[in-house]
Amino acid sequence: MARTQSRETQAEAGAERATVIKGFRSARLGWPELHRIPHPPRRIPLLGDIAGASVRSPVQDSMRIGRELGPIFRRKAFEKEIVFVWGADLAAELADESRFAKHVGLGVANLRPLAGDGLFTAYNHEPNWQLAHDILAPGFSRAAMEGYHPLMLDVARQLAAHWDERSRAGDDVDVPGDMTKLTLETIARTGFGHDFGSFERSRPHPFVTAMVGALSYAQRRNTVPPLLGPLLQPGAAKRNAADRAYLDGTVDKVVEARRKAGATGAHGDLLDRMLETAHPTTGERLSAENIRRQVVTFLVAGHETTSGALSFALHYLSRNPGVMARAQAEVAEVWGDVEEPAYEQVARLRYVRRVLDESLRLWPTAPAFAREALHDTTLGGVHPMNKGAWALVLIMLLHRDPSVWGEDAEVFDPDRFEPKAVRGRPPHVFKPFGTGARACIGRQFALHEATLVLGLLLRRYDFSADPDYRLRVAERLTLMPSGLRLHLTRRSPAARTAAAVGA
Image (cartoon, rainbow, N blue to C red; front, side, top):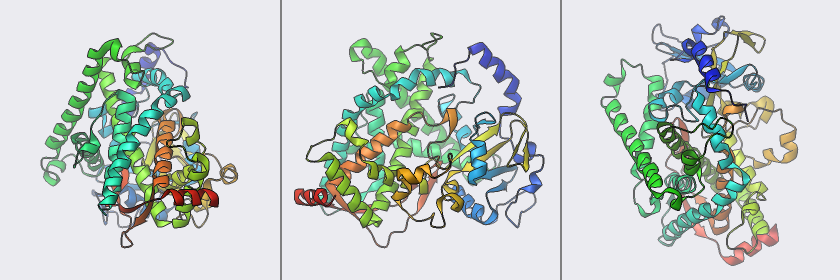
């Protein structure tokens, strides 16, 4: 954990860098020899590289362009020009915390009206980031995770009951929709003692609708110039304001209910830590406004990315029967006949975890992260960067770099994550949770939840996909398979036993 600075020291650092960190910084302002970096052909004066570009899938567009242009390239849309990096060697340099730090830009900065200086959207100089991190980090300790485990199991039971009902009716299941219900309920109940009642609804909870609207709006602002926004997307700003108001209002009700409950309603969860815990060194506490921002951050980021990871994993399991059978055999062998696994049994599902990791390799649900130079430097020995210059690491191509992952990098293969294979790869080539001090604080929470749920579903069902379905990926800052539905076959006890014997 990074050393806690005094509020005065951080404020001084923030004042010194204020002119650097505020607002979008086009690449031409920070890369003195930008001409060395290739860009797509057919660049149009004033408009940039918009020929053939898709507003709905800018990340997948960048993947296509990156494959053509190489491990570092640039794209320009109107007045915005961005440097992208995906080569493993360059990404490793950008992960160096002595030279680079998190850059809050693009869609992340567009979320600041909603999440402010929450853990994900805070600028590096803002003191509330370190304060909140130090207060909340114990909420993801092993002891805390063991406390969340029974609640995770309870939400998984709701999913299983829902899927059993769909299976008996002969209906396919809406994988992204149901994974979103599962992960929203899990973070809401474990972190904040709140039940959205998602599985009692035929439609997504309004919180999810507002969240998707806010994320999609932030994504669109990356590609549409501010002056053209009202013309190309009439009413979008008004809808976004309504979405933000709903999200804020929901969180305010959750926090107010906890305040009224007082000590008699203590849960020992993340919300209790926000309300009751002072910083262990300075004695500072989170303000009411920052608590709201942190709760919004956790409710949104804590379920949106995990639901995508589970959905992609289920897609690949349904398309790879041999992988599914091997994972089912491991669950049968490790968990045996116990009705529900204990906390420590989840980490023993090593092959199931490899399935999850390989899904995150191919489709990291947070598909990129930005890094900015802490001082003047040179990237790759070729590209000078001024202090404050930044680049966007395109994780999906980093995870497919053939120099690291082989010529078959597009192929789904969980054995890439066998311990020997992992040890044989250089560091900083697998980054689904970001990098450095600002990497995802809830990583272990998400991995435990996702491994637990996959294990429970593999033990209970066989999955089969529509043979005509082709993976389509929706982008709303995060990634999610679109239109993914699976057919379920409930597994018999005899099938589970046979799987265990086969293991």
